[in-house]
Length: 188
Image 1 (tube, rainbow, N blue to C red):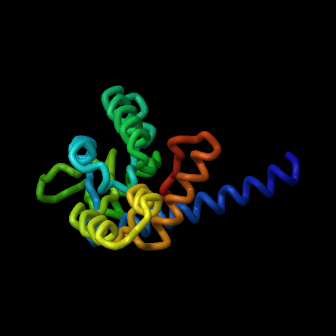
Image 2 (image 1 turned 135 degrees about the vertical axis):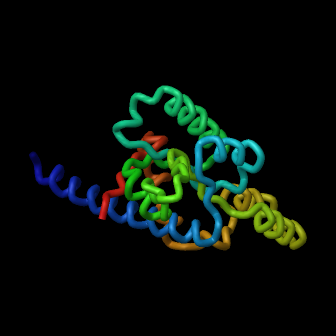
């Protein structure tokens, strides 16, 4: 192993840890502000109706889900839709940690079935997007600026460093031709 491989490996590990932590912060903040859509079917419905409100799509699996053909087909369709609509995508492993972050109890004492955490969307409200869009178009804004707004809208609940870190990670991964980067959430 060369020095570059050793140094590069530790830098990559540190970057992954930073992005994992940012993702955890983002999920907690988004849930607090009711900006999460949870579930494969619920996510597909929302993206079909209002794709502009989605800023991040998480596809979550663990090893036991690798053989679930139906889930993999849903993931393929969701990934294609996200790519067509310029929505950042992350493939995440660590379902137990994800459930902890979102307060889901797999051993629900009330007999309720746990939520489907295989797909989670981080969203912004459509009313926020519409009001900001109207404000921009009512002022004298040049078309290129308003177009960049539509691609990267200013998002009130998600104006946090965590979203910027996760989005940067997704953009850097796309630059390396890794269209669906993978991230592991470790149990704590």
